[in-house]
Length: 321
Ligand code: A3P
Image (cartoon, rainbow, N blue to C red; front, side, top):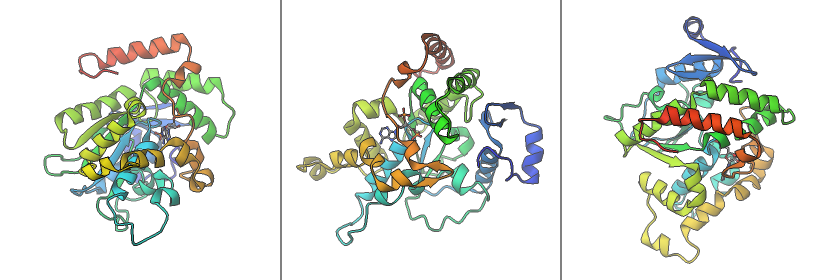
């Protein structure tokens, strides 16, 4: 649906005709505020910018696609869910009744895709949203709004390979090396969907330095290597740190949350084995979840080229990956 252009207002059609455009193997992309979008996504971005009013307690999960969004959404849901009094109910945990993307919808896809005034009344506080837009496009006035944004960043080479698998699954195609090469070219040229990757990352990196109470910068690799530390960091940032009692529990709360949100646990839930949303089968959000899988698919030349570009783009920013 994102790739089509059947959802554009007259205003957007006029705007689009003045924007830089390019094409990838799926469709036409337009550059708006420094970021590349397929037409319907751009309409969602514009609707969002027109209509979204942040509330003090809002939490927005942000990422470049395939960086660990699903995992971060699940962890955030589980952290907040543990604060609720569940003794009175034996209902399923939300993560067992819906996919993380159903519980934490995307602003520019699901919610604002068709309207700048979607019905948000079903959201209780804190409202949980997500986005792939870069930080500047969110236009959140942090000085006046204490809403919180959590960004997850991942090694771009693993992001690329993850994208490749995901797109092939989405297009119901066999793994096709030409598709990987095309994604690689787009990435290097900074013209991929939601790219350039480095601008995306830097927007949130800088935001996290400037507004540390509002923007938390997380790394997929650290979440993998030290999940307990990272989930505690997330809990603190969200204002729901683990209590001493929780930390002392025999089978600790931290471990329970990590287990519930593990790739194995989430991917084996019925809802994630069978459901679908936004034209995507839930099962496609779960694959290997490993650090360094790109080594199995990218050539040395590809790796070197990406490393060189990234080093050049991050130079002077203080950001290291
Ligand atoms: P791989 O394709 O490398 O396996 P996103 O959620 O942003 O779409 O990112 C998808 C990537 O996160 C996939 O990476 C997927 O396997 C991985 N992933 C999904 N759920 C995860 C989890 N609970 N723990 C760790 N990684 C997870």
